[in-house]
Length: 183
Image 1 (spheres, helix red, strand yellow):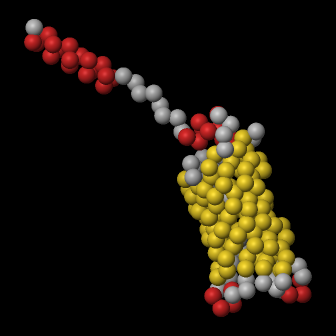
Image 2 (image 1 turned 180 degrees about the vertical axis):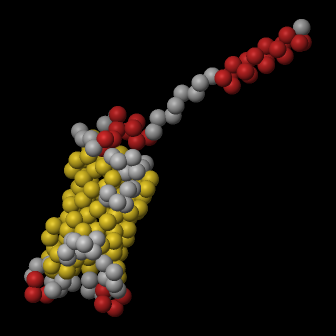
Image 3 (image 1 turned 90 degrees about the vertical axis):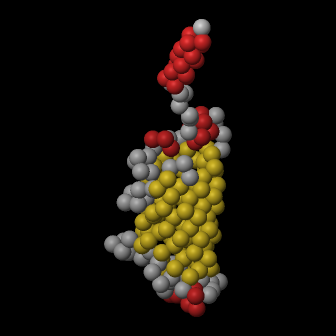
């Protein structure tokens, strides 16, 4: 009798061990299916593409210029490292305000490692009032996600950005925090 109990217990353990686990659904996909706002954070570095001409800010007589294109690299929440060969920002225009704030309007594309991407437009303000002394300047702005492909098909959203521009090499380190939402 004792042996049969041990045999039944062994069979139960074997059955439990062989039971298929239900896959855990990604939190991103759960929020997307429920049509709920999806938190979005990123940490990027942007480096100038030296093959693209610089954009001269208005008023042009002050001769303040920004890189025309910046390559993005870094990580995003949910998707990890982005494809730095397919993620970029294009400077549409810039202007110098009161001799100390550069406002830049841009558009860009962020591509994940699996090739899905989303387009965005946005603006940043760079406070250059102390840039000559420190070689760095604080950056604030906003990104509006406008469209996407693959997992980002139908996406929209707003992300607030902050960071630091390095005037010595034209790079920007920036963080973003906001939400994505699907139509």
